[in-house]
Length: 532
Image 1 (cartoon, rainbow, N blue to C red):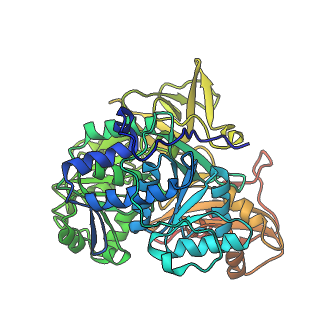
Image 2 (image 1 turned 90 degrees about the horizontal axis):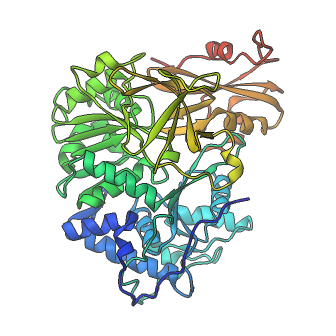
Image 3 (image 1 turned 180 degrees about the vertical axis):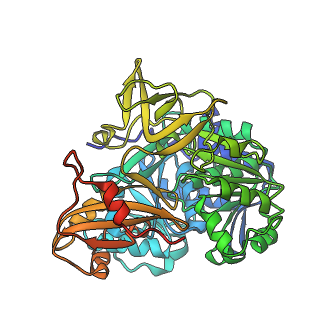
């Protein structure tokens, strides 16, 4: 059973803005609009769109979403690449008082269908590629109405289209409450079905209060936008920037080849990416000392940050404050932070990894040992507080992810950490088969589940080896031998590109350890290591 997303009725367009509109994600943009109305809120390649223009577009699109309805839509999907449709679409859905469900045009259509169904999405904002996905879903029997502002001339009749019309949109955003769900993001699930994580306006309100106190962002800043919009770190970029009246700048793929030049041309001052990007920029020759002087802040999350990478980036951006920030989706973007110090931080690293820092104010944490008892120094990190989701959209997904202790509910991160002498935490590794790939949390069990569905495969085990190029997934499988190309062809219909295994190895049987369990460590050792 899927839980409902709160959706009280929308007010009429003529009603005045209530005090509640000063709360949640819509208020972040309105604050930036008041500070710098003619600033570029968004730059996509060479196209700049001002705060005033984004606001008017979002009001108009939100009006189309609400036209002919007596209540706000429960959830609005955004199925578009990093362009005007995606960013304005997110804001428009929020202005309509709906829950936003960011989706990826690169995901297989069947995975997108599941996300639409789990979230109860009743309409989708789409660009050209998004319309193609929706068309395929419509052909398969799922017709979700689409608002496609840039594609109104291309209606092929395959799906229901929401007319934008010529009438004015809303006068102001629909008020929201702390308990209303701002957005839903999906994480990898061990059953082969993605898990929906609802994040409320109250949760993001607490998070951005923390961010406002920690960072000195202003309307002069230009934020990188390296993340896809269905990755929660993209929310940081958008709503930290928009709350300050600053600019969000997308990063085209070609820019990574000459990143220092791109940063200088765009006046980039705030960088945020997964740590593996540092290795990419190094290979492109972009980490020369002093080569990125415009950066004021450099933030990394989504993977473990290596000390040598942090030091190299700091040298390339000497005027930048470098931070390692950490947090599962279930805890609203990030829940800890460590500010890199060239003099102090190297001595706090464990296994070459930068500490993840201290838990945000207003939260508590426990370290749980292998025996289930609270540990003093090392164990699984469990967190509770105002940024913690109450549970997944499907309550059956809650099992094993939450802990009841001391009359309180705690989220189990599955990450093993160590408490350092200064009160900060350092990441030691995963307790389970969940791994980080290019910033995405991936359940190896989901990949194994997908491989078992391939023709001729009896069983599968996925393992990870890490080298200079980051983690690489190798799948060992039993059953009928098949070519890697054929297995990859079948998996591409199910798995996103970022979850695809890099190698496949057929075995007659899996090795077992002394406990008669599959010896994953032995398989990992047998897998070819990543280059480097």
